[in-house]
Length: 364
Ligand code: CA
Image (cartoon, rainbow, N blue to C red):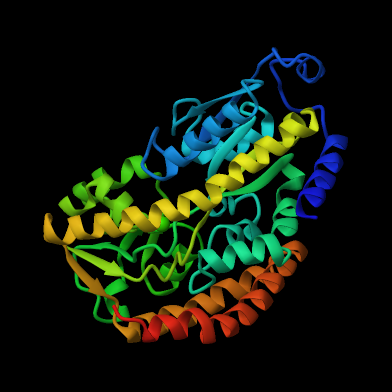
């Protein structure tokens, strides 16, 4: 059913075809399996960055393999073809046929985009996937990107992130006052309400900005990725939990015209390669965060701290305001908010007596 729905959406996309680029006639590919389509995938990550960049590489490899070489995808890191924050536009215009990033980077296109990455104090990875694939989330996501000629596919998840790296202790909300912190999406807006200054910044600039004092604090992802950036060298305290990113969905962006021009079997390969990585990346993060946390604590002697409950409670109250305000931005954002909130309420209720109840009683 799901696949049929997806292909239905794709045929609708075919109506919009004509504004993208392609380098080989799709008719030739359909009739001659020896022909190769050369696709570009631009990403918001440094080339080969652990988890995120290698996840994008994995998608390209799967497409190349599963298509028997009929599509060859070349992956470009941040700024190799376009800068990180221009990935969406590059896919929309057809400069690249695919992109890999996170939907909260595109709030300038639509406020609603942020719901498809992560929401402060919102759903975790398991719950996000449930909403996207069985709760109407994917249909809404496709609707949000449709005006831009871009087809989204869920393509990874970081799991619950860490709260970030600080050079001051966070004992009360006042400690966030005046804090200049790299933090994206809705979490950044919440920090602003708490008196801080959120800064948007691609991965490649984080280390030097924190080192030079251009920013006071940063979040990035979790132990695996934060170890790779070396953030423990330029910050004293590593706080948890990542209240602002409780399970961030990564995305594959596909140019609709390029997609619509593919024969059905290649369309299925493109989508399903992304879906393989959607699951695989979460497994990788779980395994490697676990190992990297041990290294941060025992080899690099990082001071790992929990945010005080009082701080988290205030941030949660601010988050509710920020998220609810998006609902009023436009009609579609309102529908996305209602769908997300209604699913979240129900799944939290189920997970209270399943996942949470189990977490509370199992041995740690
Ligand atoms: Ca993050």
